[in-house]
Structure formats: C-alpha cells, structure tokens
Length: 212
Image (tube, rainbow, N blue to C red; front, side, top):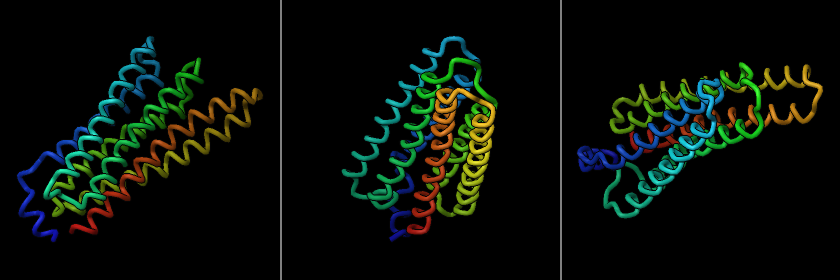
C-alpha cells in the first residue's frame, strides 16, 4: 500500500503545503512570543494581536487539512494520521498563544531569564518540527526525520530542567505566594508548549512506521 501511495501522490503537494504552512505559522508565533518576553517591543498589544491572528490562520489551515482529507480519493497517509498530524501541529500553535496570553496577564516586569530561555527553546522546537514534517514528503529520508524528532525530545527534556529549576528558585526566593503562582503559571504554559512539540514527534514517528 505504501508503494502504491508513493506512486499516486508524488506530484500532489497540497497536503504537504498545508502542513508546511501550519509549521511556518508556529515558527512565526514562537518568534513573536520571544519578542514579547524579551521586551523587544514596548507595545505588547501589537505582538499579542499578531500572535492571535496567526493562531486564527493556523486553525483555518487545520480545518483545510480536515476537509481535504475527507474529500481526497488518495492521501499521503491514512486519513486518521492526517487528522492526527494536523491536530498535533495546531496544538503547538494553541499553546504558544496560551503562553503569550498568560505572560501578558501575569508579567508586569522584564521577563526572568528562564522565561526567555524557554521561549527560545520553543523556537528551536518549532524549527525542528517543521523540518521533520517537511521530510514526510519523502520517507526515504526517514533517518533525517527521526533526527529532527530526537532533537525535539532533547529540547523538551531540557525545557523540563529549566522550568523545574526556575520554579524551585522562585519558591525559595519569593515570599509573595501570589507572585509565585503567577510565575509558575507562565513557566507551566511555556513548558507545556514544548510537550506539545514532543507529542507531534510521536505522531510523525507513527506515520513513518506505518508507511515506510
């Protein structure tokens, strides 16, 4: 079946273009999130609105994949895998948006270095995710795709360490429990975003196994 699909689909870039568009949106949102937490712009509302618009576009792209998969006679992968991949990529989009809103709500001072570091990790993870998803158009390159997935997993593990260390430090130094809660909520959202990137690798690896 996998061989048949390779024969029928190679010139049909529609699905892969949609997946790539979705991943590109995630990278753009991650870069805006980093600008937000780095204080590179004095007007947070502009950045927040840009992130929100990209999130809406991401949702639209996800639904395009759903509709195209439902109508297609032949698709690159099983329909359920198409849905799963579109959802996994879009979940990253959702959590970048959540992270930006949580930061804007709770953070009134320049971001703690750990927050900036996590935002940077999210950018790296989104770039690796885009590379992995792009690679799915040619499963002969599955080793390279797996390398991208492994890098995402390593980044997620590092994000766990950064977040855990930062939470421990703030609980030790901050006496105001409300501030502790605010800070940990921001960290949790950022770390959860890296979790979503890692979850996308599970979907990608499953697709490779089924179609290689």
